[in-house]
Length: 548
Image (cartoon, rainbow, N blue to C red; front, side, top):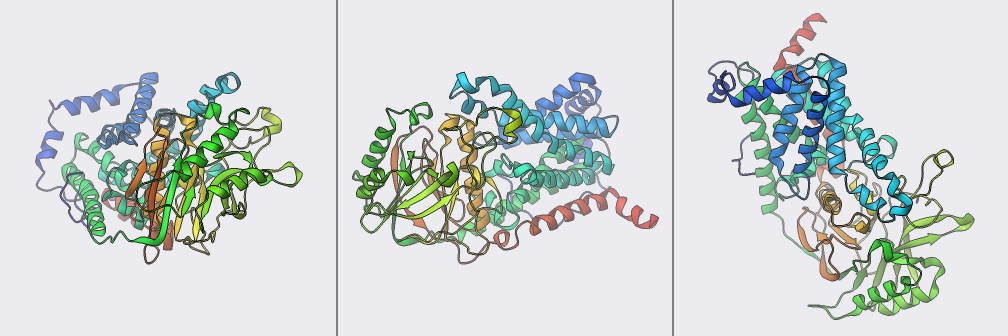
């Protein structure tokens, strides 16, 4: 964002002095202003037109998400939502417009879920509207809760905007935990196009970035609502974002870019069509092709370790000694091949797992995915719903034990993550045994050439910044890549590409980041500070104290 860096320390007081109105204030109160008329039009809508506009504002906001990154669209989206919340007849209306905003935001942002179901349309095609709008409707309860809480606070102006940003962030945080959690497309992820901006996640996580972003995007709503100081409030909000960007650039200026010695990774991206992956006549050929890709000559030094994607081996690897032997023959001498595959166990249990295999075909380490995808890897309330999960096989997957740090030959200690386990802020590294890097294997081929894989890759980059750990991501059809501890993409293979990527392994930071050290306690302090600042700006805090 080409905004000059400025101190954010005045953000709590800049809008409190009504004297000497700025040019922006004069424009905001101009009776002929086009934006003033737009605000009046928004406030004048009733019934279904009001709710349809809220849906449109939510859908508009998704244009700021990866891969488009049209961040400016957040301004009309959130400013319009603020007008609808404050201009409605009461709390029930605020809840309704918040829910419809959320429905538009999640339906437009998660449309790619339908591609997974259309992989086998004869079996799951009927579920598309229920999956997209049903999931979006449940997730929309969180924006609805934020809108309701903001309206109940009863604040207007810049103070009300700050309170709204605080409660929005609190409900986004809840979305990552309630009913196993789904923190996808958090507002802070809109900044992943800027290495400088995302450095703020090292202190307050992606939620902290989201809080400042929502405050800045919604603040222009005060310009055309009358009153004084609106222009200064907007400048203060954008100055806070500029300060984060400036601090991020300063942080990156000191990044050394060191690599782990004597480690050379080969990432294998076979780009296998999900419809064909488990075809009985093709499974062996898929493995053979990945073996060929693992051993073919590359540029530079030969690899010491080879990494395949999630379920890259479409067999029960623990029960397939001949496949393990073949993988061992293709494994670099003294190194390992790390791959995803299913694992079976006693009682017919099945796990979505990661295997480390040495040159002798021996399994030297395993990890079982513990954060399973509802309906994709297991069916909640199966006895009542009565339909199968979307992924291969009729049995539900069993969850693993949880986060671990694996000790693998020739590598720093690694924190393995399978598929969307990487999207959970603060829950990607074992707290009692910090790894030196994170390895995320995934299979985004379910979602085709859509926005879903870009959003998934953006989440992985943010985890690198938050934890101060490099992330290596290997996906069946992309995006595969190597990300350093500052979230910078050092090398990548694009979506829908078949190929291999040889790269060194970046080192971790010398110590944990503030976010890795304190977790969401830092976010709690920030949320309370911004909300408190909102009450102070509105004059409500002194009034409450006098009543007491």
